[in-house]
Image (cartoon, rainbow, N blue to C red):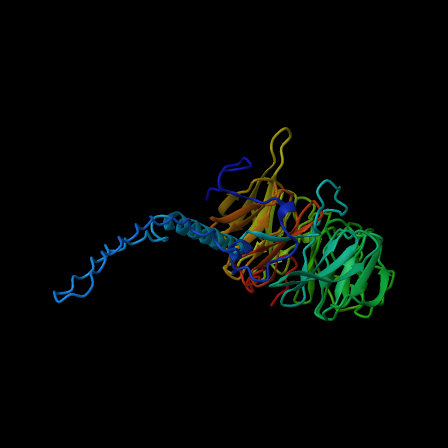
Amino acid sequence: MPESGDEEYGDEGEDIVDLEAVPNWVDAHPSEPPDTLETAPPPAAVVPPRPVPAAPKPAPVPPRVPSPVVPATPAPPRPTPVASRSVPEEPAAQAVEETAESAAKAAADKKAPGKPLWVWPKQIPGQPYSTAPVRCCPVLFGKTHFAACFGSKLVAFDWKNSGLEVLWQYDCVGHVPGSPVLGNDGLIRVHSGDGWLHCVDQGGAREWDPVPVGEPLGWAAPVVDADGNAYISSYGGGLLKVTARGNFKNTPFFRTRQKFDSTGVIYQGVLYIGSEDAYVYAIELGDETGRSLWDQLDNCGKTDWFINSAPAITPEGIIVVAGRDENLYGFHRDGKLAWKIHIPGQMLSSPLVGANGDIFIGNSVLRVNQKDRGKMVCVDGSSHRVRWEYDAKGAVESIPVIGDDDVLYFGDNAGYIHALRPDGESLWSTNVRSTVRSAGMIVGPNRLVFGTDNGTMIGMLCSSGGASRKGWAKYMAKNR
């Protein structure tokens, strides 16, 4: 099990970031030296030359006489003055060298993975935070375009090389507890706290009038099928359906007395979603009403407590879900239990699956009168045993994201963002001084974002060119 360092804050040598000092823009030329180098270095001190003694006057020349001429006495050689670039040059050259090294280090720090480059919105010191915690997962709809929810606003950004640019904002009226969802049709759906489902295009324009689908659940977000139909977990239980054109019938698409307070996933035309009655449901889509494929009387999809986690799908088609009973489950496509592993602590995160089939899940150990603890746990995809555990600084509710270089990124409740290698060794960790419960997202080449509980989103550099295209590398991923 890899070591994660000391448990107390302020460890010597760790990266601690003062978010109030982080700009909300990025230098357009991070490789150029800072402005301090544009000022010429102070001139070297010059030692004044020694005074040159005057040459003696030549002896008077006697008048011409028949005798030989007596030549004038030659002047003594002129002493060479002390050069101005001799001894005083050393400290000046050293100062220039140190300044150049500082500039190179500053330029390297701007490119170092894990260094926050911007915080949005910019917080004003001394003023209370005006937005709710940012716990959603952003949606990516361009090479560097992404959108996320801040309170009741859906905000779209473009993270260019020159910095972060706000493209547009859409007012959802009510607070949005879940994540925005991008359909195959390129439209973004948002379920707001006032009970309406909104749909906007990638320019921020409303696609159709909001639909009254009722109050959202805390752990659920809409899911969209390949035809653009949206399925919403109803506050009264079951599922509601809104078509790609915004048509809605105020009758359940799928009826159940229990609530689906989790975000489901659609895999090969079937919606897999967890319920408060401790079962995973497999609901066939495509008809006017949904049809359950698993028989609960045969204990298909059964766990030992309710489910808030979003499922993940392995390359073999196993549905992986974390129960609130401290167990991680794998189910076959027919609902039969494939495997089960006990992991002490609450799994308030959702599982991910790496390219080699390994499963990653955040874990929280909460004890009365004790400091909250958390781990990132890796379960071997073949033996289904714990391969390694990484001790975080606090409880882990954040849903990780896996980069195309197999680096795993996640946050913890102590305010740290971590980057791990596939073997669980730490690459870096940065303290952003605010709880990180959101799902991570890679929104462009070497661009990583996380939301924080102080109502902001942080952008930092990472080594990954994008999210992995293998396995189930991010929250609400889609089968490729």
